[in-house]
Length: 212
Image 1 (cartoon, helix red, strand yellow):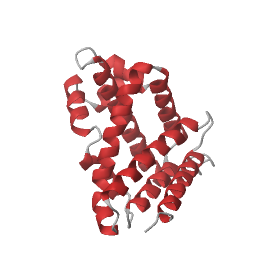
Image 2 (cartoon, one colour):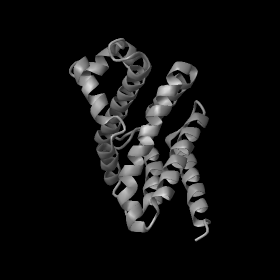
Image 3 (cartoon, one colour):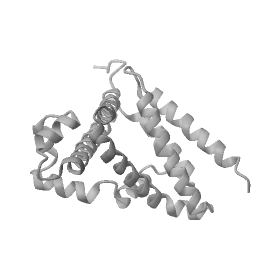
Image 4 (cartoon, rainbow, N blue to C red):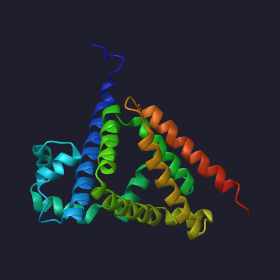
């Protein structure tokens, strides 16, 4: 039996399932971190976390044995430099920071449309509730610091000053947020990746035009 045009080839399905699992786990961890920051750990229930992550409570327990396991994961993995460095290395890209950021943009082409819509709804929830905005910005700052730490060896090898790397990572995360917020309801992985690739191209042009 052949696959339908919209159905991925059989050999690609395990990879797609693994990416979806990673995306779901990341959504749960992000939701937990935001609520822990806003309300405190003691006042945040697994139900609260599941609601913000837009998953069932049972799904949370499929990823984490219990509430304590979830708390440990948030502390250990949220915006961690080692985790970000591992994500960078998994891309298998040679070159400096700009090449890595371009690969991050291209990675969105292999996501599913449903996963990207979930990510978009999650960001909308953050912006719709003012009390979540502060924790979100704090989380993004930690994410930027992790990205800087992960790309630091690449920057040193390519001769990019630390100040330039910091500015580049801040600009990339800000542009990635803007791209995510501007996606329409019927967005596709290709459109999201194209918009991110355009953002990286602007960054690349800006860096190429800097005075030596």
